Length: 446
Ligand code: SAH
Ligand code: SF4
Ligand code: F3S
Image (cartoon, rainbow, N blue to C red; front, side, top):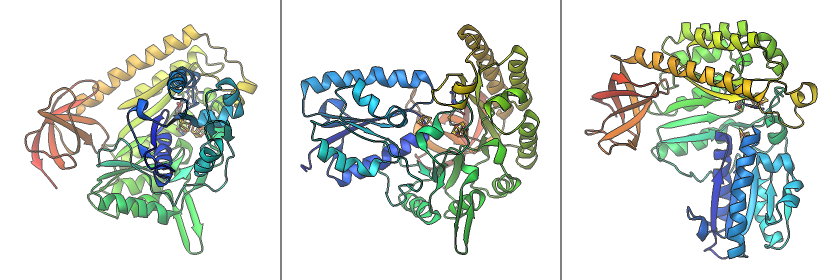
């Protein structure tokens, strides 16, 4: 294969997908492909897609029509659809989009080189076989869009929770954990390259487990092993399911200085009856008990969440319970969505998507406004306090300002003075907006 072939890769969806694109980039650079950011220069275009909501899929379908045009200008161009939409729609994608060469599901990326050779630009091919074992453990990801400071490490794949609304178990298959040794090796390699922050990724990281002879590793012990690699490495994780957050995990975070004090704990709804229809396996009370535990052991803990409004059968009262839960918890940040019915899920089979679009819109607006107030409140409490910030970028607005994140995962902007990217600095928060903390450096650390 000619070494000058160029690959352009575009990614949608969650961090797992971004992490997978780095695996795909690694597989293809071994095949002699060079990565390009110029789509017009590409010999091969990959889109790594998301199916989580209908609008995520629509966006991709619109976007790929532009590749059709590029292909008419350059007939040798190959186009591949990867990821969750590939898995969900399978060969149908090839039928509907005649210009697409490859459709590859999330567990079939090792097969791409063979598929490219066999398709040769003239035959459409699909591989959407899901695996019980694939974790791409031995593939060193090629870091895309990296700032050389923070990286994601995928520690498990798939999901067995089957929340009633969610397409992920269908697109990503069964849950499986990656060998702890390969996770630690990847983290060590990042540390040796100067990285200072890793986020351990999975759809439900709390259920990470590995057993082999005497070796027994759960999520809390895995995080501790990664944190022990270097006191200068910050460890984060995403996402945890409220039903299996153990006391052990909360205690581990509380006592380990370089495991960040922040939890992303998707609640989805504040109403126990809605949660039951969602098959989340916890009640409002159980969720709030976990929050109380987190707040008591880690008083300065950052808290964020995901919320769905307008789920099947959601009444005004049930929605009101989501509002009151948000008021009670006081999240720093939230991702908020209108329910979008996904084919084949339990919700699609069992319940009518019966909350009118207009009501979904109103409920969403209401909680977005509330969250803005909560974020502002939470930021106001930080004014006057000093935080350790890992400097990760030069401010987009002004070159004399830099920004980074606090342990609690809030963005802090400050005058750059002498700070370097990748350095820890102590910043005193002097004022804030609803979205950002602003402050001044009081001390330079390592
Ligand atoms: N594994 C993670 C979530 C992955 S999907 C977890 O369980 O927390 C990210 C978020 O998308 C979910 O938390 C949920 O809030 C939202 N989401 C998932 N399916 C959805 C649907 N059908 N409609 C609207 N939002 C959805
Ligand atoms: Fe989807 Fe639930 Fe799995 Fe999260 S835990 S990916 S919401 S099925
Ligand atoms: Fe989307 Fe698949 Fe992630 S559906 S949210 S890209 S697991």
